[in-house]
Length: 296
Image 1: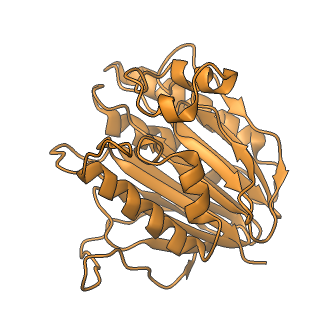
Image 2 (image 1 turned 120 degrees about the horizontal axis):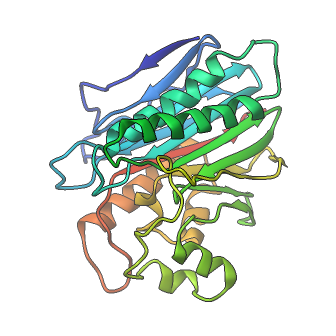
């Protein structure tokens, strides 16, 4: 496979400044797509793994340093592919370098796999281990989160390190999968000690206990889950989860085309980042969202 990097050079906006939704583009089976960009004004929408994936990314409003989020799509067969989101840790040295290196290592591991091999779990785990070793070897204190979804014949399996999120919901709003943030607050929510309404405002929400770039990194692997035709899968950096509650994300993605769902999520998250309110969360941050839904 060859790695293709896209950097949109001409923003595409509607007359009112809304994000435009382009035509869905099929991804060639011999090309991985890596997105390491500051700002997308035009949503990316692609065919892979038997469905449609839409992606949007932008750096934090008012931020002068580059966007530290990186994402990628790795098509394998018409019914199999991998989605990746990484978030370089803000406040750490070279967060963007760490997130890009992490994604590149996972993509490389998948590219080196024999095309006839259907089982991707070993290659993904090897890629994550390689990513951790490569970021540690930088020796500059950089780190990154990593969220990965493998899709094969309508079955999704997740792998994650850190607090970038993966969520799977049905069309009626039932959450079929939601990853646990590897953080003190994430574990407190999972144990019932803190509810989500309080957690999103907690002063320690930014603390992470497990990242790419440490000697004690660990990988959380989800169980395989079969997607229904109208299910929606979302991978996102914490720029989304720090500004929208999980139930709001579910409501925005469960109805309509996946591309429109990502536009709704991005628009609302950015709006909240720009306007502080006592009634809703507001935390400016880099933002990356991938949405996926089956088409057959």
